[in-house]
Image (cartoon, rainbow, N blue to C red):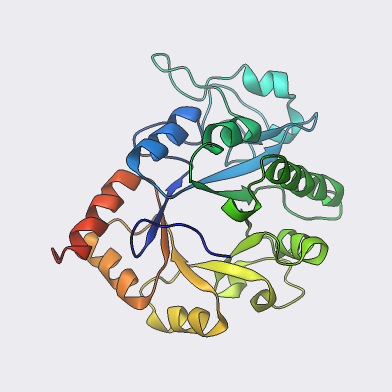
Length: 255
């Protein structure tokens, strides 16, 4: 499996274009598309009544005008909140709405499962994964979606049931992952490197056949150049337009 990228390093909009718009909103997703990003990264959670909504935190406190845990709120309650401001009203979107937006484009989706495994949350976690996969299949986007988690239980759940049908995104070193029971080498398509100026980590992943990716902490052109030289294949960024321009300058020899 390989994903389309316009340059040597693909660019993913982190929660959409969350530099210029409110994170994980339809405006942020549209902004990422308009910027020329190759991918949109987002976060999936379940409401109390089992709706798949796109929000990073386990509460609505930081990103909306409401308070409470997502898992304890109904979809109707979640949709009544403002994820923007008084001049820019934004609803918390559903994963289906994002699929509708990107289905007619060439963009890839990177869906982070934010339901984590515990004995008490096992069935809810599995339900969230299954619902995400059902939507991927409904929209015929298995070759344009990744499933992503800091919880290896989530990634292993997908791998054990579906093999390598779905590209799986983890984190490296592997001690960034919880609940590891089998080697992530078996199933990972890519891994985001935390110590992103450590060339040995890139070399390790490349030797394992896993794509090295880097995250939103990379904003300076000099660090971006280092990551590119070390072999990073994708950067997840809050400001895709800015990173795309910096990559273009690097590829044209403007260091």
